[in-house]
Length: 400
Image (tube, rainbow, N blue to C red; front, side, top):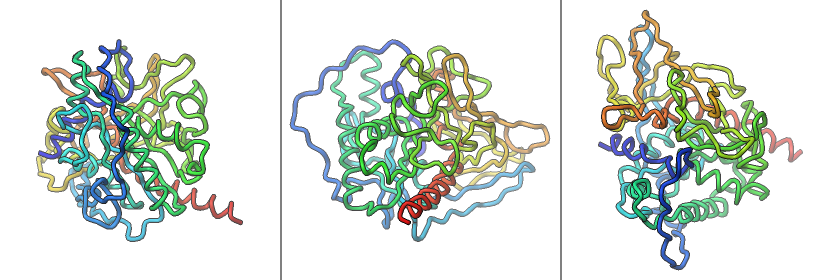
């Protein structure tokens, strides 16, 4: 049930959080005037994840490896005992609270998405994940259907910035940090970098910024400029203080003209695409961690993983060599194209679910938004560790 809530929540995320290519809906009613307050991030219950406790980021991350011949092996997950760096994670639009902005009580949907998207990073880093009063799914749905509601996007950003400030003041202690988000969370982090990190001492602590599922504008043919003025795209694993951003579509189903991702409105700009599996942009097979039962209720259910129909008992599945990705352009869109490498001799399924289905049809304008992170999750986690080592080396060189 938790996995279903997570997937259902994600389907309404990007229409407002990431910008749209279609005509915007009616403007929401202005938020009522009230004193600006932020949550108290000195309190443990304002965080989804903090180091040293049992929470969403200590959830089971074991995976079943399904090999081309259909044989299986369990990959047991072990978190780092003494992580050398930190990760600061902001989750996507998942709140099912009936109000335009969520409250500060984490429901099963917030807890589940952190378990799916952030917990695996504990292989190498301490994870800090604040609860924040995000724009909720009911709030977004109301606006998208033309009903005026007092959603407050600035509130979500203020909360995350307050959590970031608290983390930097009392938890960072000069450690390198990877910023991680998805969809609305990525949009908030993009704003945080642009408004509160670039040009400040905190910028020196940034190992990398991993913000898939949002549109990051960069000048065509360049790696810096646009939405972020001094934070370039990552092009080698030794690059630090850089950005990994992309949106995913199937290689055989490129973005349609009304696609919600992969295009930006600024003249002379394009949406950034950084392939976590091959930073310079080549095609590469991925280290995917897919949900064993699929992408949730908003997508078709995942069928058997191999021709023998054997069950999977772990939360995640790995299918080495089955998926590959490459940064691709189609018209004005730039995106990460996902290919299923189906061959007759492979005993594994050729069908990887993840398209959003509504009314019996696939919503092609959403692409594979539900799989933005799972399809390259292992690549993201390993990249964070390599970049952290490079960052540490640069810090040591600067101190000499």
